[in-house]
Amino acid sequence: KDDGLVRTPPMGWMAWERFRCDVDCKDDPENCISEALFRDMADRLYEDGWKELGYEYVIIDDCWMSMERDKEGRLQPDPVRFPGGIAKLANYVHERGLKLGIYADMGTFTCMGFPGTTLDKIQIDAQTFASWGVDYLKFDGCSSNPLVQMLGYPLMSIALNATGRPIVYSCSWPAYLGGLPPFVNYNLMGEICHLWRNYYDIQDSWDSLQAIVDWFFNNQDEIQPAAGPGRWNDPDMLIIGNFGLSMDESRSQMALWAIMAAPLIMSTDLRHLDNGARAILQNKVAIAINQDPLGIQGRRLLKEKSRIEVYWRPLFQSASALVFLSRRTDMPYRYHTSLGKLHYEEGNYEAYDVFTGTTVKGLNSTTEITLSINPSGVVMWYVYPLRKHNHTTDTETLRHHLRKPAEFRFHREK
Ligand SMILES: OC[C@@H]1[C@H](O)[C@H](O)[C@@H](O)CN1C(=S)Nc1ccc(F)cc1
Image (cartoon, rainbow, N blue to C red; front, side, top):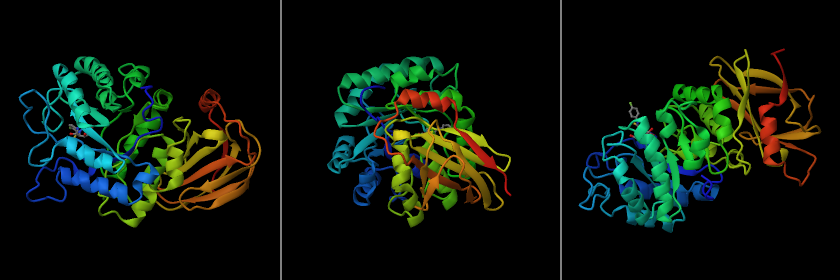
């Protein structure tokens, strides 16, 4: 959507993957879906340096609602778990310079059986959210069908515009249509939504993460061109800080979400986050790559027999992000490479290693480099040409070159 919102991928925190539909505030008050949980996370984003890094949206997911709409037919929060109401929670979040997201479902019920937004309720629900001061809507697609969705998702886009309040619109629509043309028209998606879920939900495991990554890059010819400022593919939440990923696997998710220009929406307990996970989520260079102003989504260039994969994203001012990902589960792998002809630029480069902070100097297209990559891990570089030029490479040129992947030379283990 070209209304000035999310010109770079949204960043923030969302309840679902970590906290699911835990509504038992009697026996599990710390973790149940309640106003206290979202206030706690707003406090953490504000006090622990997340806001300054760009993490600004606090997003409520399923299970926030009362089972009944009010007498005017409006959605209302569960009165026990959200006694102050959503408007008050939005105010709490806004006082900390953050933004509030909420969840609804285009259909009879939400995925967990709470009241859905049927076609006749789209207008009133958009108005309700705007009146509460909501800044972001995740619109799910359970308990409906392709016809209703084809009407409802555009109608909600129009209804949100009509409120006069800037509200980021996240659509689950493609994911319910299988995520690929001809059932999904990504040009249309970019007109209607600011971001969209393409594929299955992420679960707390390396297997789930790999399945999502493989789907996105196996289908990159259809998916990658759809992305740009104000229109983002959404491979789902960051699960870094939870129980399923090792530190190497966590670095891999952060690196790949940076290449994909994916929303950086955490779903973990910011009140109890280990330092390794925090360092990965707060890595300034990975965030800068993700938030690159060109908004060009990266691509997978190579899947090697050695089970090393190479990913590349062109960045502002002829820089590049390069990710070498190991799919191996056996042992660290020493990998020899050279930059080859990066994009279309000749000359000397430097590579900043995003997770170690070291710099590789004096690189040019023939310099031979040896990397040691851990199993399920990554080496991620921010590569920049030494010839400082102030002209910015126009996006179209870059998009053109993206289809012609850079030539890299790779050498097998000596
Ligand atoms: O209930 C909401 C939950 C989260 O919002 C996810 O991000 C959405 O993609 C949908 N969703 C869930 S669990 N959806 C769902 C997942 C599997 C299934 F068999 C039936 C519904």
